[in-house]
Image (cartoon, rainbow, N blue to C red):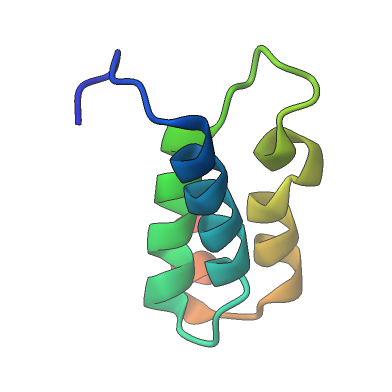
Length: 74
């Protein structure tokens, strides 16, 4: 998908909610892909952005004692 692509508001909201939900998956592969997708959907310039406000990525790193994140973030 192009960087300047636009999504319908309902589709965008659905994708954000699914990505945030998948960031709590048991599988580290699913969590990693959800974090990557969320990064693409995130609007860091908007302080009310759902993904930015929740900071799920950093919560996952702290909470999940997973070798995948240990390798990435030592």
